[in-house]
Amino acid sequence: NAGVTQTPKFRVLKTGQSMTLLCAQDMNHEYMYWYRQDPGMGLRLIHYSVGEGTTAKGEVPDGYNVSRLKKQNFLLGLESAAPSQTSVYFCASSRPDRATNYGYTFGSGTRLTVV
Amino acid sequence: QQQVKQSPQSLIVQKGGIPIINCAYENTAFDYFPWYQQFPGKGPALLIAIRPDVSEKKEGRFTISFNKSAKQFSLHIMDSQPGDSATYFCAAIRSGGSNYKLTFGKGTLLTVNP
Image (cartoon, rainbow over all chains, first blue to last red):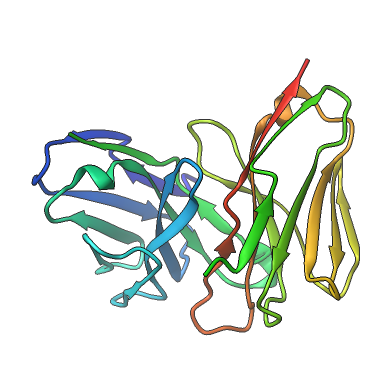
């Protein structure tokens, strides 16, 4: 049982380049999320999805796009990377009920550096 | 608007000490309050959670205390160990909401010295 898998784990981009971060979960969770984590800022929600084919903006969506074409996958895209997007990105999934303790399952993160 | 305020930002204790991390929330619609533990290089993991109909919950050495009238809750770690060194996040959610988003505090970096 892999849980939530993020690829790649590390990436260095040049300013203006694009890339896609992939998140895959094997728990049949409806809800998926993308967060970024920066020192002193905690976890900030970028985008989220409440089911296949749906996406919604979170707290810091600018500069990012997402897609949820399949229930198990949630993709985060950076169209034109900027140094301000240097961060650690976490994907999470959840099934909101008492059985899961309303908990999120997080991936191990992608460390992105934009130079 | 930061709906969950967490303090302190960092905390250093000696082995065996009892670190306390505090959180305060504003939205009275929140009805579920989990804590997450994150080790370096890893994603956060659910540690313990509480509903506001109880004032305290214990799981092993970890205890959540909840004060509904003050809109505050806290995490206590009994007999802390160096292996407890991690970042801890409090969170809150309205479980009956339609979009099911956790609101996180900014985290507390805990260091337990041997």
